[in-house]
Image (cartoon, rainbow, N blue to C red; front, side):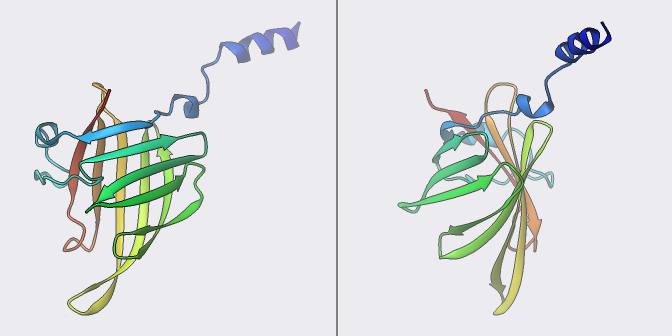
Length: 161
């Protein structure tokens, strides 16, 4: 009886939080007016289509793949949803190392790359938080260092039908 009662109790408990993770899959278009409705993480409105005017996201249980067209060039970025480190190449052949982790219903991607500022080598660190808003819009907020290279910004995309 005790085993039966415990089994019934286990079935009545809510599913683990990971089953409630949003699926970002789809073709997304930059929504300039909605991006300008709210300020970015630093309180300013910065108009930045972080993932271009349009991108395609494909997500499965282990990865998020973003296909972005930048200056006529297709850039593909793959992120592990299991917390593993990934390496992608951004325009200009810049290697970017990232680690993605779920924080509730938001995906947080922390990235590091090398760059130069005033002729000196620097380490660039960014934090992008991605989530689906209540109206189904995909929202991305970015912060990072150094502030002279990583402008805090917010981009909103709407799903194409």
